[in-house]
Image 1 (cartoon, rainbow, N blue to C red):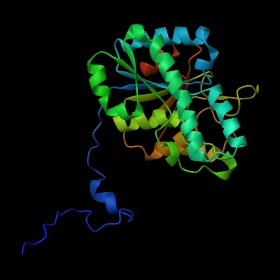
Image 2 (cartoon, rainbow, N blue to C red):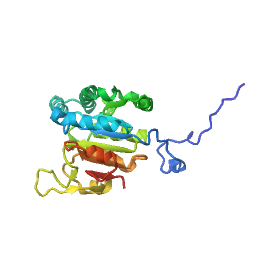
Image 3 (cartoon, rainbow, N blue to C red):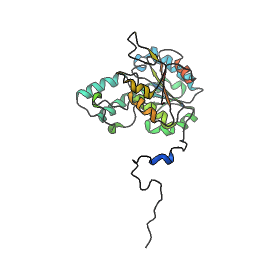
Image 4 (cartoon, rainbow, N blue to C red):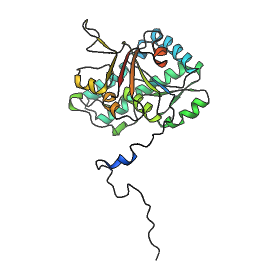
Length: 270
């Protein structure tokens, strides 16, 4: 009788939830697939919804940057996401269904942005093509992807205070893409100069040039210019240790951020 062949593994008898289990792997270097990549998230609500007066100058600036930098463009959803969420919430749609609906809209923006940037060899890619980006960049292409992470119907239920709105939206999708690719940076392009102590419409609102994720969470701010889930995930990241917010309505701000200048707001992991 043949004996059963056993595949020996350090994890073979583990539940994968034991405390301290992964200490043996902690000091091993993590593969960074694209360590020079700049992930640029173009906000739907803050940029694309403003139309040609804001979008066209920004596409020219980013297109010029893409000639000398490895870049991945990620699109948000904007006002149409808010509209479909309003309808879906009113009809009692589950969180996973809302996530599916939101993804369709950020995908439309990715198609439009890639079309606008076709002179710079932009190409719209799907979330499943993320690991093909090194090849696309090697061909001289500028990949454009929609920001909604592909959780879809498996999106986790949100806190009751969020009313069922998916917590993994397009800021989070850009962050997760940058993290898995081991990118150099993740820049969120908005319609404000950065993160403020309160909504910038108030005269006493102050710009926060730099802050850690922990400090920001401790502030328990009622509203934020980026998704709270990004701040919660940042301390756990392995490759990407900061996220930057810049104003895409001001020419040259993305260029300065890509160059590493201290513009906008930097949120650090620690």
